[in-house]
Length: 285
Ligand SMILES: Cc1ncc(COP(=O)(O)O)c(C=O)c1O
Image: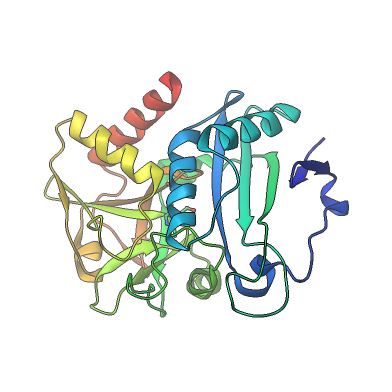
């Protein structure tokens, strides 16, 4: 079996999996989700993903019917139905279905959809030589609007940003905010290395605080790599010695060029050390 879907606890084939057209995830993106991957038959960092799921739900005032432990068990049980060594597992919880109205109190129960498939690995050369990225022409949402730190089902901002990458045959698109600072990419966080210092956007900036970003920050601290959480611009990024993206599926993925400008020495020694430290961390998790 290649793919599986589970809707509110009932397993179905992807081709037969159906959800109401009145579901608010479908109507408004009124949903939250997480993507977890597995390594060698074991879900990786699933607890912090569930913590973030709860944080996102709380911030959009969506009441979840189960405890964190129950979600953990549900995800583990679903994963056991098809424990591909390297799996992609997505859980999406929408506010549910009801009459068409923005009123968040209209639906009575949430809808939960889980989706599982083998993880398609990125080509090795992405990790060895790095990937091209572009700066998107659309800005990242402000924290004061649809807070990017909520992993909601509303990804239209990122979809529009990704269009720039797709058109330029780049791997990812990086978004700036209205102040001209780099925030994050469409589904990954951004780091750069300047004179041996590792920079990433502040925790309270217009970003989703990625689980992989958190792990990399901890690893950098353990390796005594000087780390600054600071705002930086596209010029800083282009002038950086090295830069990389992080996400659950990309791990630590070097950036080779930004808008066609090749970075000085990316991937370089700091990226390499963090890639190795990340692989070691995964092995021991
Ligand atoms: C907007 C955004 N930023 C960052 C990330 C990286 O998060 P994580 O490391 O938790 O996978 C994601 C992941 O999908 C994302 O959607």
